[in-house]
Length: 267
Image: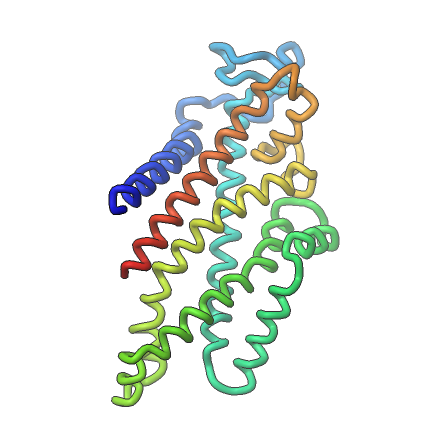
């Protein structure tokens, strides 16, 4: 069992490192512009001058893959981070006593009752298409899930015998929360955030594929898939890069989330 967890951690870390190396180190090695068009070299297969080919506008796919990776991953991290911070604060507030905590809990339950992806579509439709509005929409529908998770873990921890003994000994609620509850939350939230990162990246790619996220001529993995759909049979190499990167990040997130969950459970 330990070896299995170690393999999951190593494989996940290796996949994530590979993608991050491509995104962070790639521009230093491959300085081709991701937006420059060359209509004399459209839909070219992989070659020395274009290692993974060109798209229908003659743009270098490797350069677009590198540039699009920064957009995709930074957007996903912003969404997960924003949802995590808001959800943690709201979830901890819901553990307090009184009418305010009950109202917060009801608000969390109401937010979770709404279909998140449809609500995100509504928000983007109201605010307008674009990555900025899409990030806002995903945070707006993502925080309730973290809030419920934090509330459940915190309430479970607050009812533990050692916490009850500390409260009876006169330890204040703030000291209990910061010294005992929040550290206990950290490992569980890290696993949840890792899992959510993979889901969010895939959902972002889906929204961009539908034309609701990044807009041309910007590079983004979902947008690259959308551009490649009409050349699925004639030029399949257009799909390989973004599909491989999305798959690698999602797989890495799942493996790391599994390992973090097991580590947190042992803690």
